[in-house]
Amino acid sequence: MSHTPFILGSYAVGAVIMLWTAIAPIINKRGLLKQLKVRESRMDRNQ
Amino acid sequence: MNPIYLFFHKTGSPPWFYKYSAYLIPWLWAGFIILAAIGLYQGLLVAPPDYQQGESVRIMYLHVPAAWMSMMIYGMMAIMGIIALVWRIRIMEVMIISSAPIGAAFTIIALVSGSLWGRPTWGTYWVWDARLTSELVLLFLYFGVIALYNSFDEPRKAARAASLLSIVGAVNLPIIHYSVLWWNTLHQGSSIGTSGNSIDTSMLWPLLYMAVAFKFYFGANLLSRARLRLLKQDHRKRWVKDLLAEGKN
Image 1: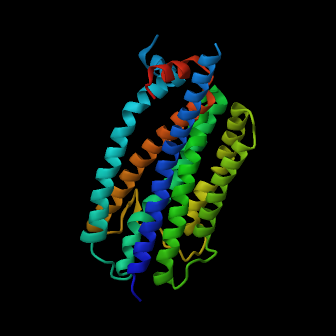
Image 2: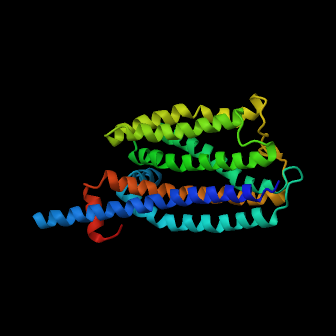
Image 3: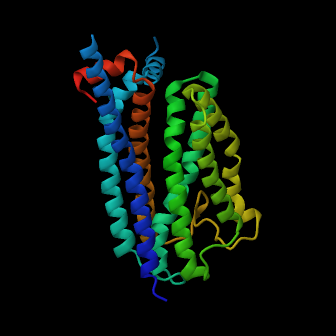
């Protein structure tokens, strides 16, 4: 039995999970900052 | 004020934490990338195949450090839980809930890579062995902490509940660690311990590089998540508004 697919499979799963775990807060932060800036500019316009 | 007390007071202040953690994150990512590159190169290309496991031993350079991280992070969550409950330090509460998804990710990696290692070595992807089952319970504990936190509207109440579950769930950590000694398991015992190592240095070094690399990854990821959570919780506070106005985010 060749071990290569199991080795590659393990590292691929590891890479995808770690990449997603690292990128998720960055994407969420961008979204949040956008929301906060929109809210701030709306408040400024209303004042 | 005593400089040590002053340091702790400052670290507990969200604006201070938010500002200074930003300087640390790029260094932690750099440390992770360099160490992981060395560890992967040595583990996948330099280290020899095992005389029993063959080439599948290369999965160990991912599986073992991920399993260590899964336990270390939960242990840290339990300690931070005690600090959060006793001293009511909000940064600690934020750190607990920010650690949980990273710990869950490492537990999934440990379970999946272990399963993929088990197929060529044991002839099966899964057995209800004490080590594997207790590691699966750890994953459910991580999910439990995340679910419990999200079930509350008020973040500080949510953090107290999550802290409590983190502390109670820590009872599973010695079960995972000693499961291979307490029960007759298919999973092998520790190859690395305080009393000595049973693996060759050509295999030990890539393992250690990966283990340290994962700690850097955890540090960088934890700080990023904690900063995001602080922004979400404090978005109506003055310091966040000042930050947005200055454009330093």
